[in-house]
Amino acid sequence: MSSERTLYIIGAGGHARVLLDILLAGRKPVAGLLDIAAPAEEASLWGVPVLHEDILRGAEPEGILLVNGVGLARAREAVFRKFHARSFAFMTLVAPSAEVSSRSSLGEGAQVLHGAIVQAGSSVGRNSIVNTGASVDHDCTVGESVHIAPGAVLCGGVRVGDRAFVGASATVIPGVSIGEGAVVGAGAVVLADVLPGCSVAGVPARPLSRDEKDSALPGKEMG
Image 1 (cartoon, rainbow, N blue to C red):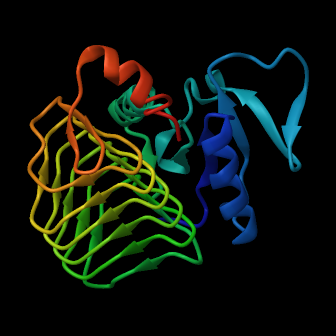
Image 2: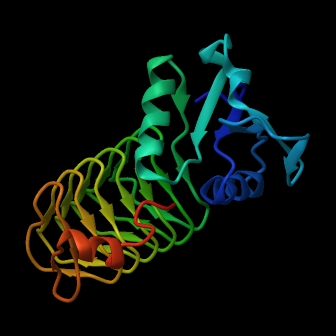
C-alpha cells in the first residue's frame, strides 16, 4: 500500500464515522467522505469534506485507496464490487486497539475495529467487518462481506460463509459452521451448524419463521 495514495471513505453514515475517527487518530489524511447523493450544501465532518462519489469518475485508480464505510450488508457488498470492477483498491483497516495475530490473515478491505481480536490461524475474507469488541478465535474461517457484530464471539474452528451476519454478543461454539447468507440474531448461542440463508436466534439458537425474523432481527444489517 502506497502512502502517496489519496484516501477516500465511501459513505458518510455511522460506520463511516467510526472508520474516519480511527484513521484521523492514526494521523492518516482522508481526502473526503464520498456519498452517493450530493450534499444539499457544503458539508464536512471533523474537517473532512463530504463529497459526491462522482468525484471518482475518470480518476486513476492507481493513485487512490478506498475505505468501505457502508454498514448495510447488501449495499456494502455492492460498493465493494462496483469499485473493485473499476480497479480501485480497498484499504484493510485494523484499529490501534485491535489485536490481530501475525499468524492470521485479512483480505482486501477487511476491517477489524476497536477492541476486536483475531487469533492465530484465522482468516477474515475480503470486505468483512470484525466489529467493536468482537472475538474471532483460533483457526476460524470468515468469508467475504461478512459482518461479525460488536461483542460477538466465534470460538475456535468456526466457519462463516460469505455474506453471513453474526449479531451483537452472539456466541458460536467451537467447530460450528454458519452458512452463506445466514443471519445469527443478537445474543444467540449457536450450538449446531446453521444452513445457508437461514436465520436463527435464541439460547440455544433455533431457526426463525418469517414473522419471527421481522421482530427478532431488527437492524440486522446495520454497521
